[in-house]
Image 1 (cartoon, rainbow, N blue to C red):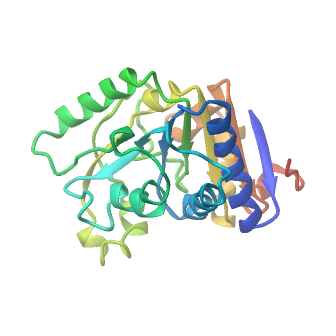
Image 2: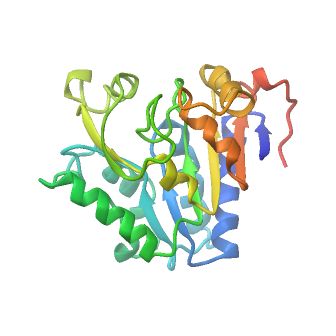
Image 3: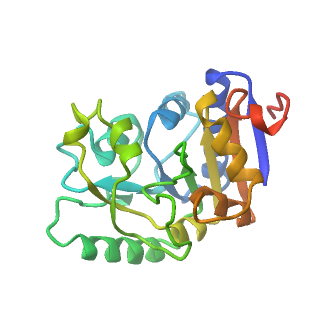
Length: 248
């Protein structure tokens, strides 16, 4: 496990983007797993800037989105697919046939999930999976109690997630109660994992995730077992780890 602590949000975004850019430069045809949310939005802005400056080529990159809400797809600006397209995919030279999304408007979501797992394998597996984390330790839509052997599947969206996304869907009652998500086993099969967290509200769960026991009650704690885990935090998110500013 490698932990990087950055001074503020701007340096957090730059350092996180540098980690992702390094993966692409080292392997131009990298397969990347992308998370959505407030934590990653600034990171993707930095990646777009690098691309526009001619410093980063997405032409051979393949991408998989981590999760999606039932019934929400590209036409819905609150969907994960639409947000990733607006924030990154549509801003760089990523080939459309290399962008894999969960079509959660389909009638058979179990089939969608099974086919997503197959496509990940056909693509050679995910080289770098980018993750955020919820204050209860959820990663993707894998809520506390999720089995570590879980794969891509249909799930109930946790109330914490629904509340956090209420502004995007106008009100919490409009946030779908079901979704599709990569499972914990799917995530752990990635060659490398990049866990991103910022803000004081994440400090407690970061301590539990990185220093506590590996327990399904804190889904993200399983990341301790991954051989190539990089964690990037701002000083607020790292404050319960007793680490000083340590940006590389």
